[in-house]
Length: 172
Ligand SMILES: [Zn+2]
Image (cartoon, rainbow, N blue to C red; front, side):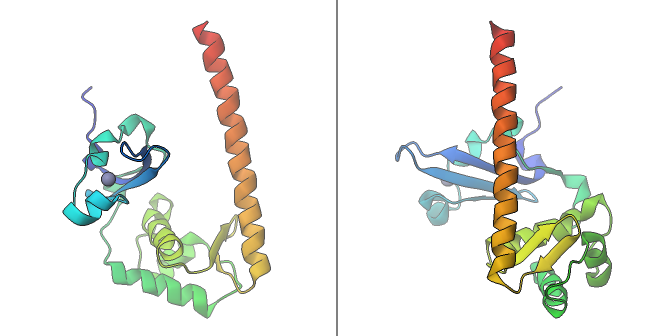
């Protein structure tokens, strides 16, 4: 089977090492076939060699292209409005999709993408949990969410360490 080109993925995030600045990392993001890299070269030229370094086998976050319906960027403000109107209340991604006209199904991929942008690029205090998403009203709520994320991160680290050990034993 021919290897899929990274451009065929609609959502890709990978961290690549800088060659010129050891220790520095860049984030490559491909959204619906549109590439982005956090390096200065990409900002200046609109392309860079990091895009070629993304290994599709190492991608930790992918959404198949067919699961994504193109939505104008402005639509994310409908989600923001809904969350702010009901600040402090948990709202499921399914309800968010139904209330804002986003595509329902495929685990609300589009809603999750829009919320990621609202948090990570626009810096809105949206937190997530088992019951969906919530516009945080207090610092305590945000701190609690950070702690939960950290626990997950440590859990993932333990899992990686265990699997690496298994891998090394198999190789021997
Ligand atoms: Zn780059």
